[in-house]
Image (cartoon, rainbow, N blue to C red; front, side):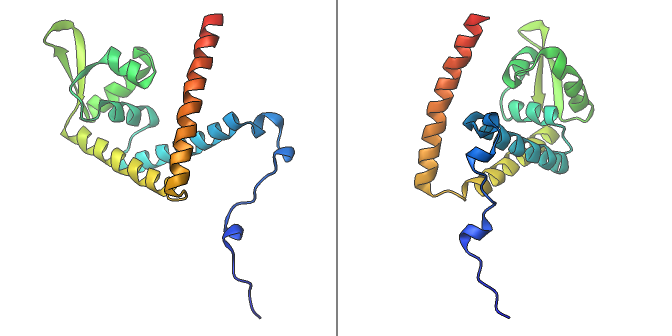
Length: 171
Protein backbone atom coordinates (compact mmCIF):
# COMPACT_ATOMS: atom_id res chain seq x y z
CA UNK A 1 0.00 0.00 0.00
CA UNK A 2 1.38 3.41 -0.91
CA UNK A 3 1.00 6.43 1.24
CA UNK A 4 0.46 9.92 -0.08
CA UNK A 5 3.40 12.22 0.60
CA UNK A 6 2.60 14.86 3.18
CA UNK A 7 2.47 18.38 1.87
CA UNK A 8 3.56 21.48 3.67
CA UNK A 9 -0.09 22.38 4.14
CA UNK A 10 -0.79 19.07 5.87
CA UNK A 11 1.96 19.79 8.39
CA UNK A 12 0.28 23.03 9.47
CA UNK A 13 -2.35 22.96 12.23
CA UNK A 14 -5.95 23.21 11.09
CA UNK A 15 -6.94 26.81 10.60
CA UNK A 16 -10.16 27.80 12.27
CA UNK A 17 -12.30 30.12 10.20
CA UNK A 18 -13.12 33.46 11.84
CA UNK A 19 -16.82 32.70 11.42
CA UNK A 20 -16.40 29.63 13.67
CA UNK A 21 -14.85 31.66 16.52
CA UNK A 22 -16.60 33.66 19.19
CA UNK A 23 -16.42 37.35 18.18
CA UNK A 24 -13.92 38.26 20.92
CA UNK A 25 -11.55 35.37 20.11
CA UNK A 26 -11.54 36.26 16.42
CA UNK A 27 -10.09 39.68 17.22
CA UNK A 28 -6.45 40.30 16.50
CA UNK A 29 -5.78 41.44 20.07
CA UNK A 30 -7.12 38.14 21.43
CA UNK A 31 -4.97 36.16 19.03
CA UNK A 32 -1.90 38.15 20.07
CA UNK A 33 -2.70 37.53 23.75
CA UNK A 34 -3.01 33.79 23.09
CA UNK A 35 0.38 33.84 21.34
CA UNK A 36 1.95 35.91 24.13
CA UNK A 37 0.52 33.62 26.81
CA UNK A 38 1.80 30.49 25.05
CA UNK A 39 5.24 32.03 24.72
CA UNK A 40 5.22 33.15 28.37
CA UNK A 41 4.16 29.72 29.63
CA UNK A 42 6.90 28.06 27.59
CA UNK A 43 9.46 30.56 28.87
CA UNK A 44 8.42 29.99 32.49
CA UNK A 45 8.85 26.22 32.09
CA UNK A 46 12.22 26.66 30.38
CA UNK A 47 13.66 29.04 32.97
CA UNK A 48 12.40 26.87 35.81
CA UNK A 49 14.23 23.93 34.20
CA UNK A 50 17.41 25.82 33.25
CA UNK A 51 17.88 28.06 36.27
CA UNK A 52 15.28 27.02 38.85
CA UNK A 53 13.59 30.42 38.63
CA UNK A 54 9.91 31.29 39.04
CA UNK A 55 8.32 33.71 36.59
CA UNK A 56 8.78 36.69 38.95
CA UNK A 57 12.36 35.63 39.75
CA UNK A 58 13.35 35.25 36.11
CA UNK A 59 11.82 38.67 35.39
CA UNK A 60 13.96 40.19 38.12
CA UNK A 61 17.14 38.42 37.00
CA UNK A 62 16.47 39.40 33.39
CA UNK A 63 15.85 43.04 34.36
CA UNK A 64 18.96 43.26 36.54
CA UNK A 65 20.99 41.72 33.74
CA UNK A 66 24.48 43.03 33.24
CA UNK A 67 23.56 46.49 34.48
CA UNK A 68 25.03 48.43 37.36
CA UNK A 69 23.27 47.99 40.71
CA UNK A 70 19.80 49.53 40.82
CA UNK A 71 17.42 50.52 43.55
CA UNK A 72 14.60 48.20 44.51
CA UNK A 73 12.14 50.95 43.51
CA UNK A 74 13.71 51.25 40.05
CA UNK A 75 13.72 47.47 39.62
CA UNK A 76 10.04 47.33 40.59
CA UNK A 77 9.29 49.96 37.93
CA UNK A 78 11.32 48.03 35.35
CA UNK A 79 9.30 44.86 35.88
CA UNK A 80 5.98 46.68 36.29
CA UNK A 81 5.31 45.58 39.86
CA UNK A 82 5.33 47.38 43.17
CA UNK A 83 8.11 47.03 45.70
CA UNK A 84 6.03 44.83 47.96
CA UNK A 85 5.27 42.38 45.16
CA UNK A 86 8.91 41.73 44.41
CA UNK A 87 10.28 41.73 47.97
CA UNK A 88 9.66 38.01 48.59
CA UNK A 89 11.20 37.04 45.24
CA UNK A 90 14.21 39.27 45.94
CA UNK A 91 14.62 37.71 49.40
CA UNK A 92 14.63 34.25 47.78
CA UNK A 93 17.18 35.35 45.16
CA UNK A 94 19.40 36.82 47.90
CA UNK A 95 19.10 33.59 49.94
CA UNK A 96 20.10 31.58 46.85
CA UNK A 97 23.04 33.95 46.30
CA UNK A 98 21.80 35.06 42.87
CA UNK A 99 21.28 38.67 43.96
CA UNK A 100 23.29 40.86 46.33
CA UNK A 101 21.90 43.78 48.27
CA UNK A 102 23.92 46.79 49.37
CA UNK A 103 23.25 50.19 50.85
CA UNK A 104 23.47 52.98 48.30
CA UNK A 105 26.69 54.89 49.16
CA UNK A 106 25.02 58.11 47.96
CA UNK A 107 21.83 57.61 50.01
CA UNK A 108 21.96 55.21 52.94
CA UNK A 109 18.14 55.03 53.01
CA UNK A 110 18.15 53.26 49.65
CA UNK A 111 18.99 49.61 48.94
CA UNK A 112 20.71 48.66 45.69
CA UNK A 113 20.45 45.20 44.14
CA UNK A 114 22.67 43.51 41.59
CA UNK A 115 23.36 40.05 40.27
CA UNK A 116 26.10 37.96 41.82
CA UNK A 117 28.40 35.76 39.77
CA UNK A 118 25.85 32.93 40.12
CA UNK A 119 23.07 35.36 39.18
CA UNK A 120 24.98 36.40 36.08
CA UNK A 121 25.24 32.73 35.07
CA UNK A 122 21.46 32.38 35.49
CA UNK A 123 20.98 35.58 33.48
CA UNK A 124 23.18 34.25 30.69
CA UNK A 125 21.14 31.00 30.64
CA UNK A 126 17.95 33.07 30.36
CA UNK A 127 19.38 35.14 27.49
CA UNK A 128 20.63 32.04 25.64
CA UNK A 129 17.26 30.35 26.12
CA UNK A 130 15.40 33.43 24.93
CA UNK A 131 17.61 33.71 21.85
CA UNK A 132 17.00 30.04 21.01
CA UNK A 133 13.24 30.39 21.48
CA UNK A 134 13.22 33.57 19.37
CA UNK A 135 15.24 31.89 16.61
CA UNK A 136 12.93 28.88 16.58
CA UNK A 137 9.82 31.04 16.47
CA UNK A 138 11.05 33.36 13.74
CA UNK A 139 12.57 30.70 11.48
CA UNK A 140 8.99 30.15 10.30
CA UNK A 141 9.13 33.52 8.52
CA UNK A 142 11.10 34.74 5.55
CA UNK A 143 13.27 37.82 6.13
CA UNK A 144 10.71 39.89 4.20
CA UNK A 145 7.79 38.50 6.23
CA UNK A 146 9.68 39.20 9.45
CA UNK A 147 10.42 42.79 8.46
CA UNK A 148 6.77 43.30 7.52
CA UNK A 149 5.52 41.71 10.75
CA UNK A 150 7.84 43.77 12.96
CA UNK A 151 6.78 46.95 11.16
CA UNK A 152 3.12 46.11 11.77
CA UNK A 153 3.80 45.30 15.42
CA UNK A 154 5.65 48.59 15.91
CA UNK A 155 2.75 50.58 14.39
CA UNK A 156 0.17 48.67 16.42
CA UNK A 157 2.21 49.25 19.58
CA UNK A 158 2.14 53.01 19.01
CA UNK A 159 -1.64 52.95 18.56
CA UNK A 160 -2.11 50.68 21.60
CA UNK A 161 -0.04 53.11 23.71
CA UNK A 162 -2.20 55.99 22.49
CA UNK A 163 -5.36 54.02 23.34
CA UNK A 164 -4.01 53.28 26.84
CA UNK A 165 -3.19 56.96 27.40
CA UNK A 166 -6.71 57.90 26.31
CA UNK A 167 -8.24 55.36 28.71
CA UNK A 168 -6.11 56.69 31.56
CA UNK A 169 -7.36 60.20 30.89
CA UNK A 170 -10.97 59.00 31.09
CA UNK A 171 -10.44 57.39 34.51
